[in-house]
Image (cartoon, rainbow, N blue to C red; front, side, top):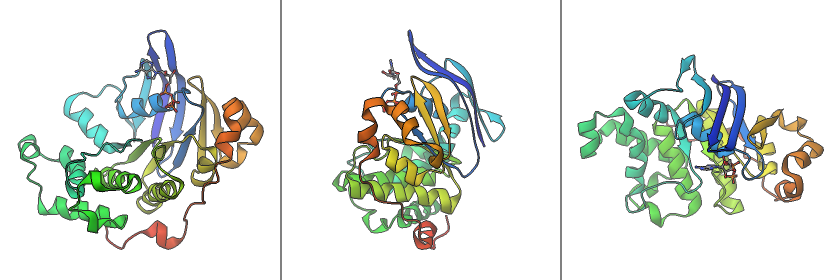
Length: 270
Ligand SMILES: Nc1ncnc2c1ncn2[C@@H]1O[C@H](COP(=O)(O)OP(=O)(O)OP(=O)(O)O)[C@@H](O)[C@H]1O
């Protein structure tokens, strides 16, 4: 369970996030929505502690993670795995090594320096790639892959961190509609198959409505909507997005793949 209490972030005079309070149950798939500049990225980055809060608390499974430092902070960042819009892979390295990077936090520093991966770590990384039908791409350079493939490699890297929480910051913003669906289906699968809580920032309201079981709407740094997708009426959406509403509500995205095969994934146990 993730508990956010009074979380606030100021950049100089700019109040980017203001007094956000949220309880997110284990296994939820929560979409954070709102127009550009609403504070969505800053909120997710504070949870992962990439951005220091100005005030407030972040508690995960009963443990206050707001002020962790050093190794404890590194371990928290592994537990609250971040997925970025631009994938953040090392392009010149092969796909398998990129996924193995997700294991660094579990290794003693001398082994992390030499990148002497254990057979167990390699098996885990291959198994994570296999979850997304990408094991055959393991030896390829990451920068030779399509955007959708790169984002799935980033999700596999997050998975080998064995996270309790995935924080995805506009993960599909750089992708075409087909790859958008593939990546959203991948996030849905790790949520349903592994029970990992997902918090995802999305610009498209249609996507948020079809994939998430709860929506948190932000405007000017504050939470202005928190509820089931069905409760977010077009009128509320218009309040949230203003003139952008038409654009974010009419992008013709495909529906999620909720077949049991898709959600169960490959038979390999992680
Ligand atoms: N490092 C920073 N320094 C100063 N201001 C910042 C910084 N990061 C964000 N902001 C400001 O804080 C506000 C919230 O930004 P944030 O990126 O969290 O919004 P967002 O909802 O994620 O928007 P987008 O969808 O465009 O990414 C914006 O006004 C932004 O300009």
